[in-house]
Length: 354
Image: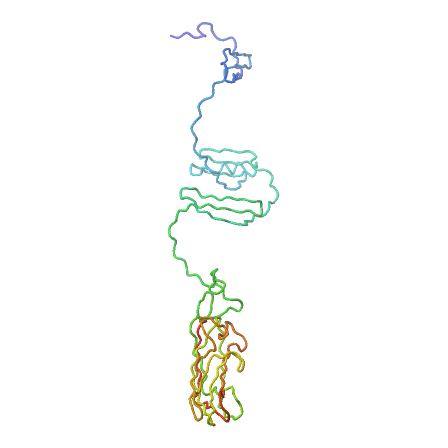
């Protein structure tokens, strides 16, 4: 049977309850403290012990759960009414009564006193001067990097180059809103085809292909009977404007009558002016005297190659009489009276892109 202090000495004379302060004595990593001290009074005491040596580095803890801002809450009473569980871990409220931040750990509250101060002045409005995107390795995390001062910042976004699932088929887009489309101005240019414009954009226009035929028949020719005139205008045709330059292919006929032996009458086709325009076609009569049919076809005074010379072309978007073809009956030799008949006269024109 154990012997106690009461068995040996009886009841204690007095029981004191001192407060004991314990101090760690730092030896700065030198020789450990060999002597300790303890001081007691009826109400308090102090004891010195050697500070322990530093322990080993502990293991890295789990990442902290990010705060999920839940906004403002009126006061502590409102906080006490919240029914929270582990599923609500990380939620945080601002206590409007105390300006403290209350963070729920899943088991209890962590309260950051005076987490919110007085509201500051209105800051400058943000503006992004530029946004650039960089595709990075699929293993990398997405990242957004801001640079520059307030009001003129630039953002560089890094996106892992991992393709996502194929999305649903979108609705067809209208070509009028495409960035590489232009209608040519106001009012919009109209056309029968979609063409590549000179500015690199697509827009309405005319197909660069043969156009025609255009034709003047007997009703558009004038019959002539004259003695003194060497040439007479007998027909003309104004061709419509096209957005590209064109050559003309001519085919036609005219009945002429040389009244005097030795006289010869032919046909001359000019572009732009009935007397000074460039000759693009002729009809020659190789006999003199009598009634003859003159065939009209292309004729040029010099060699012709694709896009050369431009003088025999109707230019793109021509103006004035640049696109008008003039047909004249011309006495090319001899003297005396001559005539031409419009009964079977005809000129047919086809246009080809230059």
